[in-house]
Length: 403
Ligand code: SAH
Ligand code: SF4
Image (cartoon, rainbow, N blue to C red; front, side, top):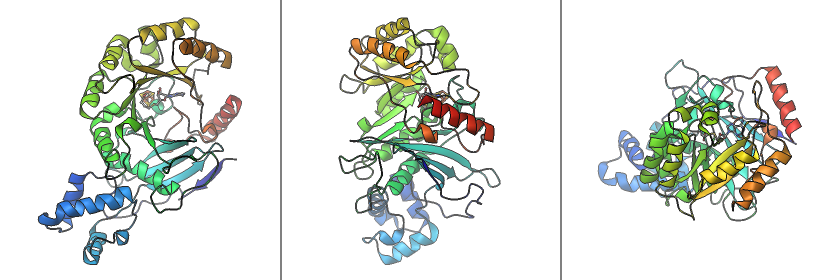
């Protein structure tokens, strides 16, 4: 059964004149925040390291927990700064253990509507993957993606990206000494519940390059959250010039939303293809600095009935990826109200996956997760753009039919 927990009513007023939060800041910004709190320059580096440990390694939610910081300084910090996380508007737990949070970020300017974004936790036996958003909405309008239909768009800050991970770990009790969440589907192996991060939520991460790069440095810091870059995957629709830069400057794993093997079709499905066509995209992958046979690039391919799912497409896909250290991920299309597409039949997906498998790619089909809470790919859409009651019913019916 799906459990839907309403944490705070969506209509609740944003907290007034909240103190600036330290959560999600990098070392430099933490230092500047300490400066505003009057911490002398000579002790700032040491204090930054202490705060880093408490915030990111221990998940502290109050300055009082920071026992190696003097009482006097703790009191001072609490007067002018906070450890606040984004507000959780709704938490949903799927029957398969997938969890989805709708988070509210403060508005940029007073009087403006606050921004709402979603992040999704996908547990497996030996790992837990958090799918984070990089933008509110997306400007790219891929024709099969629900997020692309959202009007409101802004880049998230690095702090807002990191805060999604903090919220998930808070709610899962995923810090040393905390009570770990229990429930069906959660990982039973290893001592961490969030082990991997994928930038596959709302938005195009390479259009929010600076925030994403800064967030990855914070997430992968070994003295803090400790999510190594091999455990962080950035998924892009193919912003070619930023791919090389990401590899060189940051070095996470890469996923490409390919979805078509011919430019005429990809121009329709992923319109940014008109600017950066398939050949240029594949070349950027071939030369992606961190890629190797041990660190393969994932090619995502959404299965659309009668559109891109023929055996000829599968063969062309295998051919296209020759010489690229690649993994292939076939994603059953997740329908949404108003979409013109349907998911390929199961037999068609199997036939396609067989061709890919015979070419040497292991288990290429991604099982849809969290369908009952609309947490699956492309269904992430902020509540800011309310679905009508009819749309909700239609979505639920489609999700049920797809089971
Ligand atoms: N903007 C980035 C990352 C977010 S989308 C990108 O496009 O890569 C994450 C993945 O979900 C992408 O591969 C995207 O193509 C896929 N996706 C979007 N809508 C979908 C849908 N309705 N069904 C299945 N996959 C979808
Ligand atoms: Fe944006 Fe990715 Fe959706 Fe395309 S698939 S509209 S790039 S979120």
